[in-house]
Image 1 (cartoon, helix red, strand yellow):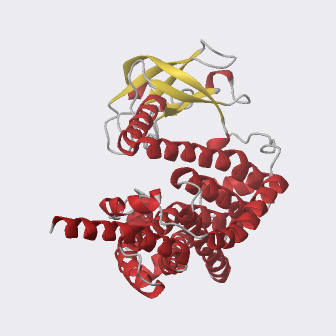
Image 2 (cartoon, helix red, strand yellow; image 1 turned 30 degrees about the vertical axis):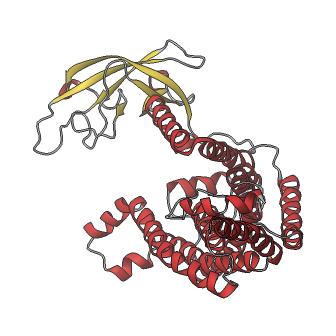
Image 3 (cartoon, helix red, strand yellow; image 1 turned 180 degrees about the horizontal axis):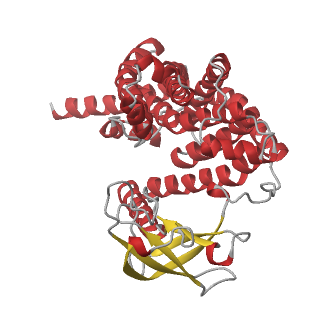
Length: 445
């Protein structure tokens, strides 16, 4: 009775691309049993998969000293002094900042100018307090300033004066501050639901770092690990954020079906297009350190995990829309609910697909600029493996998103329209109220 009486108030929360949930429409015991019969075995399989594939940690390896596989420590810029670039011996002094012109010759037809002699102090590790010198050229993309925090790479096999070099700046404080602003905004606007979303985000990140990544490095099948890990993230995030309700369960089932479709399409076209997943320095380093890792499987795992976040948004949105439509007009059957829900879904499809494509295009913008500089044709650009990976990733994910709209909408429409018990209860509950009003009117006359 409580949920039925509060149902009209939920019309104030009609969906406009938000996930605010009013009171859920009542669901019969029979439908709850049907949903449980699907989800309980699925959740059990996910738990079994987590236990069976749980890694003992990332396997150890001997550091190569290349890229992210270098030993690093924290450092601090102690002083910055101007020096004549002609007086600097490049063969004896490390050069930082990605300088484009070798020190000492100044480049063809160019004045050497003034360089910066940067003294850096190591602030962590067994060499804490040790200082070393870096030379930064005037045209270097990264300039250093006094008291700036930096990340220094340590090469134990190098000569003593060349063991340390600046590899990056320390960005921990601005990144932490931005994360704090984000968390505050989510909690202020979303309140308790926003707080639960942050908790779910932390859990998702924990699953990614404690299970998915170490399990792949340990040698488990990347696709299997991604499916189990993504399913665990989906179950935890959706139920934690939206409650243990039939509405959330329908969104979970819709997300699961869409993920399966993405996995099948991704596996088919990654194999068909002969995509190896080994296209840049980072993937090459991974393959060199762990040759047993299936790089094409790793690519497919990335497609599945990358699509999950947007899929959650779409399926929850469509389920909420159908539930709200049912509460607004409990007499609507499955066909009318589906037609009304799919009209909302079409707007969602247009915005989400555009968002996904632009997100990938933005991430690959430097690469696209390189192809533009080379004046390559569209066909040549699309045929290169580096771009083809992004195209397959985008299109497979987009197909899954598009399919999730009708799949989730029809599931939600069937569930709420089949709930004869709730509809009858609502009709019975409203009859005495109408009768009471009629009797009061007759009494006044």
